[in-house]
Length: 227
Image (tube, rainbow, N blue to C red; front, side):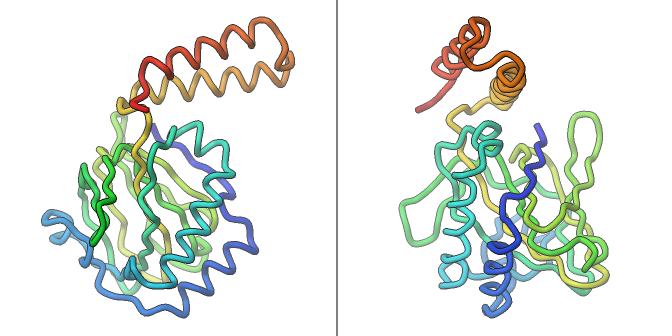
């Protein structure tokens, strides 16, 4: 399931995050790569223990908590603290699959990566290339979103970042361990939730059918959730 989430960061918050990142020291992106990723990855990354990364990551986590579409689609149990990367001068990230388990260095924090997220932080007109290309069951999807918008997709998907041939692509990326492990179960719950919310706008939350469907949703979530 691939979901685009608009306006995770508003313009003011986005400007603050950009100021933090523009003033930070960047390192080779392979600092956090697995063996397979290191063969394909050419970019820069903000050290995750840097003050700028921690502050910007906290801002993003706070914004996610206030984004109902993110909560409905990911059903988050744990979120890996956001990381940040930059591509320029032909840099790219070849086809790869994200690691199944992500461990935060120097801590006991670890998650199962069910859902991957990319939050775009640069205006798409400011750089050429840099599309996030995700291979899905029915073909590849090319994603290049406005700054402040985010895409969620299965962490088991093959994906890549196209070379950036002009300007600088800046983004945050992270992973979510969902309360619901199975992707198809998450899809079913999201589609049911979306339908309920749409009907509720027409009929009101007190409608008998809305109440019944909401009960079905929560009973399914209760059956499938790990927590």
